[in-house]
Image (cartoon, rainbow, N blue to C red; front, top):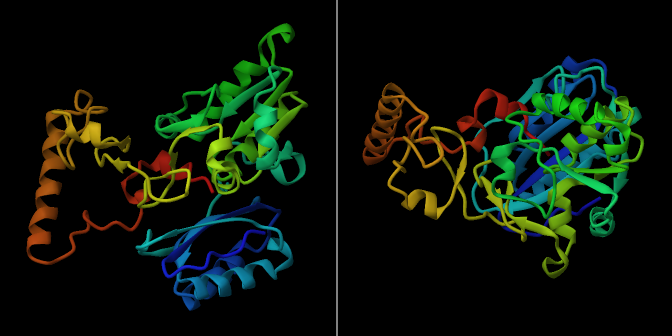
Length: 330
């Protein structure tokens, strides 16, 4: 298990585990109690299929929480990835009960029993450069737009709920055209783990997934050996991280929820809080007027030294659509 970083900054922990759970209301209360005790902020999701969350805290408090969690038999080998940030990337703590800890719309799929084969980051390059392997990015288009592994196939989904339809089309191809092996990856491992279980249910046998996802790969792979291109979208106020797991160059358009860079913000179509080149021609005058008024109220609150609800940066989740929030991947 990765060690908590030695830092004076806040520690961000992305964690998940597919494990059959019962008594969810009891687990919810226990997690609320410990996260409150450790002064944590973030979101934890619980479902019959396991746990998924991203939380932040001071290093000592994070250590107390992780010790508590991993000393429970159900969560002893929970996958945990760490990064740091100077500010709190969240400003609230939520522990929620869900039908799925990552929403594919397939609650009967059980990754705990039927997932594909884990591939450690050190072995990933050799796998994805095999010509017999189809490399699949299980993330959505707003994520793949800013970074991916070279030559990866993108399903072009807007939400993870759309992935099963794409996978079914692949399964329905003639046998001669189907890939011999499939290697899948995502941000932190949870979506690709669930995706491999679904692919196996469709009859694919040689299915692999990157253990710990892109975040673990970036953490363990020297940059000069990396096959990763661009930055990695994350679901908190950092928006994206670079190869060193530091905040990247992207911000978020609060109109269309797409990541935007300096070139986007220099474009004449960019109006802070109102539009960007991705959405300027796709929103109505009424919507742009509403966004502009929201931005004006934020500026007025800032001038008064107050915090308007729209200017808080609890996390990128507050700016995302409902379907995007369902896709949070650790």
